[in-house]
Length: 501
Image 1 (cartoon, one colour):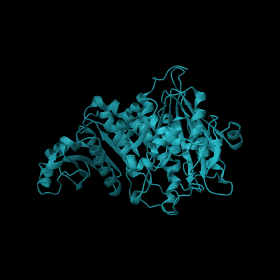
Image 2 (tube, one colour):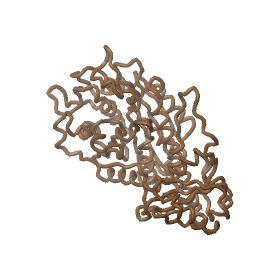
Image 3 (cartoon, rainbow, N blue to C red):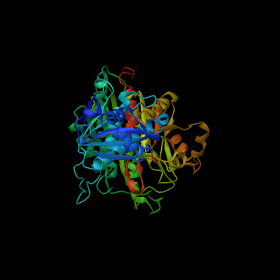
Image 4 (cartoon, one colour):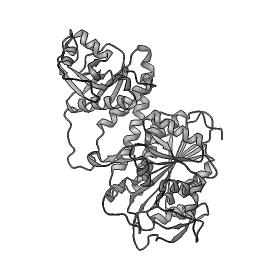
C-alpha cells in the first residue's frame, strides 16, 4: 500500500473517501465539523437521527455529501474524547481501513491522525496509522490454490497532519511505520508457513535472500559439521530425532557512524516442535509450527533496520532445527554438554528451546556485545501469567529491561518485567549434571529464564518470552509479527548510543 502525507481541509479533498471521527455522545471532531459546515449541517442531521453515536470503532459510510469533493465520507466512532488514547486511536484506524478495503474505496484521506492522543505527537500517530493499516489488510494466502479476491482493494492512504510544518515529521514517521510493517509482514509470512515448507534450511535460505535484497546485511549459515566443531552439544541434542539438518544462522548489519559494540538479537528457530520423546498432546499441535516465531521476528527486525538504513551495529543469531521423536532422539535423563562447557540433564525434551538458545547465547560472547536480547516462544507458563497481551521480560540488567518495556509502550507492543531472583535457581539443581533443563511447573517461565541466565554472565542480557503474543488462535489464527515493533523501536532509539569497540 502507498502512503502520503498531506495538510489541508477535509471538504476540499478530491478522493474516493474522506475519513473523519465522531466522539461518543455524538460530538463531532474538528475535521467532521468542517465537513458539517461545508454540507450545511448534513453531518449534524445524520448524527441527530441516531445513525452514528460515536461508539469506538463504529462506522457510517456516506455517499455524495454536498459541499465536499470526495465521493464518500466515512464517519468513524472514536469513543469518549477524554479516553482517546493509544488503543482507541489504533482501533479507530483499524475500523476505517478494514471498511475501506471491503467497500471498493481504492484510495482515501484519513483525518484521524489529526486527533489528539494523550502523550503522543503527530509522528507517533502517523507511524501507528501506517502500521495498523498494513496489519489490517495483511492476508496470508500463499498456500491456497485460489486466493480470495478483494474487489478494488485499498491501494493508497493519505494521512492528514494538522499543519504544514508537520509534513516533514509525518513523512519520516511514514517511512519508519512502513519499514516496521514490512518487518512484521516478513515475520508473519514465515510464521504462517507450514512446517513441511518452513524447515531449518528454508529459514536459512530466506536469511540469505534478505541479505541479497539488502546489501548492508551479511548472512552466514553454519551446517551440522561446523555446529559440531563449535561444541554446540546442547543445540544438537534437540535436532537428533529429525531428518531435517540443523542450521545456525548469523546475520550482521553495521552502519554505525563509528565502530560500536553490537546489539545482538538471538532467535529461537524450532520450525516444528512435537515435544520430542516428551511428546505433546495431539490437540493444537499444529500450532507448533509457530515455535520459530522468535527467529522470524529477528529476521523481520533486520528487514526493518536495513530498509531504514539505520545507523546501528546489530548481530542476529538464529538456532534452527526441528524437535521430533525417533530412535535417535534425545531421551529424558540424557545429559548433554553445552558450548559453554556446562552439562545439562534433560528431564523433559519438550523444554527444548532453552537448549538451543543456551549455545546461541554462548556464541554471542565473541561479539563483546553492548547488549543481548533473546526472543523465544519459550513457555506455556508465560501465557498463564500474562495472557495474550504482553510478552514477559527477564533481564540481568534493570536498565535494559526498562528500555525494552518502554519501547514496547511506545510501539504498543507491550511487555512486562518479571523477577529473575536467585531464589528461583534452586529448582534447576541436578544430582547428575551441572543443572537440569526444567524445574517443575511452578514459576515455569521464571525458571526457564533462570536456565538461560546461566549462559549470559559476560554481558547485559534480556529474554523475551513471546509464547503468548507470537500468534493468535480462533478465527484470526495466524502469526502476529510481534515483537518486531518492540525490538525495532528499542534498536532505533539506540542509534549512536552504543560504546565504541
